[in-house]
Length: 275
Image (cartoon, rainbow, N blue to C red; front, top):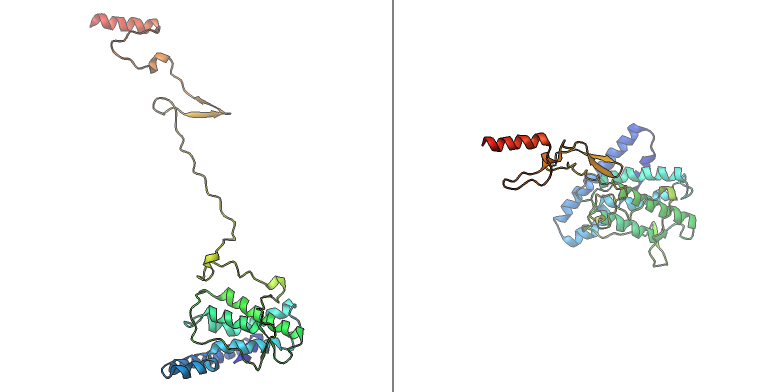
């Protein structure tokens, strides 16, 4: 099934659609067969899963694409984009609309492939770099297209075919990224849609400034009804009473100690006489 990846380079849309239909049919039949195996002996089913599961199509597609004669360097961006299209062609039906999809399985599968060398040319650094670059491209596609990052258990352990991969002598993990800087993506910062990465969630978007609450404009004066004007740093009232006595509180029985206007005093005295 790994050869389906080469259909990603097909320019004829009609032929490409036919190949995609064949691949989808093949995937569905294999999944149905896995369901029938699960009804029988568990040991037998687990032993046959690596040979039947359509998800292992990626393990065979990676060396096929790495040995493509048109793929000459792991640093050629235009060639890598073609390889990326081929990988998405086979990964799309495996990732989207698949209830059995497991991000952790693919991540572990790619990490194990990167810990191996090319079985045909294990001493050829250029060949190994191309092989590992294809693995990095596959991880890019899976990471950017995944919507659920749950690390649930997969029914089968990851296995790498020794016909195409040779175990590296070094037991160190191959964590280097072999893609050009323009094609590398930061997988440490999440996209905000996976539970696996939510623990490290850091928003890369500039934070909007919180709008400062406008203070409620309060008037001044006895009833806070006088308008407040700002003149530089000095506050003033735009209206003042005509006479200070008009704003004073009058208490019965208390003598007035402040001079009143003559007209008002005469009126008050006449009121007392009339009473």
